[in-house]
Image (cartoon, rainbow, N blue to C red):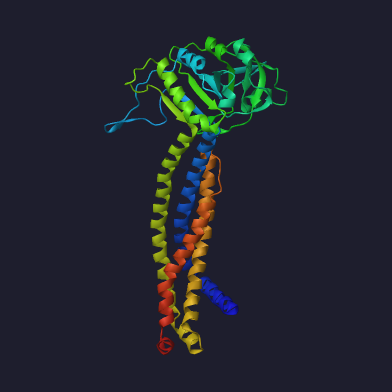
Length: 413
C-alpha cells in the first residue's frame, strides 16, 4: 500500500512538472485566497494584541472615572458624545478625600502638555515630550513599572518636591550612557531631579509611551494653568472580588460630588480595562468575519480553477489511464492518483499563501508600529482549507478518471 502511494505521488509530481504554467497559475489562484485570509487575520491579530496589551497592563482590578465613555452614544442617525462637564481638580481632590472603600487606592493625574521641550545641561529634546502631573498612586495604577530608581512616595507629593520619573526614551535622548538617577532636568524653567526611570512600553498608534516625564501633581498645576484641564481618576482594588462594590461606591461618591439628583443621569463615565478589551474584541470580530468572507470567495474561485485543470488533465491523459487499467490498475488506484495531484497542488498554494500572508501581516505591524503576532490559527486554517479545496476540487475529476472504460481510453486520440 505504501509503495502504491509512493508511486502515485511520483506520477502526480511528474504531471505537475509537465504542466508548469497551468500548475503555477492554479497555485497562485489558491495562494491569493490563502494570502487574503492569513494576511488579514494576521493584521487584525497584531492590532488586537497591541491594544489589548496596552489596556490589560492597567490590570483587571482597575477602573477609571473619566469625562466620556470609550464609545459615544447614539442620537438618531448621528453619533455625538454627551456634553459632560470636565473633571476639575476640585472634583478629583474631593473624590480622593471622600472615597474610603477598603483595599483601594486612588490616583489623580492630568496631561500638562504633549509637546514639552526638556533640557539637560546643553542637550534638549524636540518639543514632543509629554508631561504628566500625578500623585504617588499613578504609576502603580497605570500598570507601569520602575526599571531604575524608585517611584514617588507620599512625601514627594505632599511636599511638592522637585522630582520626576521619566520614560526610557527620554532617558536615551538626554541621559544615555550615564546614571540618570539624581540628574537634573528642566522644563519650562522648572528643575526636576530624576528619581526613577520607567520600563519601556513602546508606541501605540504612533504615540510614544516612553517619551514622557511624570512630575508631582501640585508642581504640574503651578506650571500648567489652563482653565479647561480635564483630570483623570483611577481606582485600583487589591482584591478582585471587591471590584464591583468598589465601582458602585465610586459612582455614588462622584454623583454626590457632582450634586446630581437621583433621577439625573451620570454626567461622567466609569471605564474598566476589561470592558475596553471586550469592546475591542467585538470590533475585531467584524474584521475577522470580513477576512473569512473575502478569502472564502477567492478560495471558491481557486477550487473551480483547480477542478478545471484536473478535468483537462484527465482528458489529456485518457490513453495513459487506459494503459494503466489494461495493466490491472483498479478504479481506486486511478482515483487516488488524481486525488494526490489535487492535494499536491492545493498544499503548494497553501504554503505560498501562508508565506505571503505572514509577510503582509509583518509589514503591517512594522508600518503601524504594532506588536507582530505569529498567526498560528490562520496558518492552521489555511492548511486545512487548502486540503479541503484539494479534496473538493479533485473529487469529480478523480471519479471521472476512475470510471473511464479501458478499451475506449486506449482508442482515444
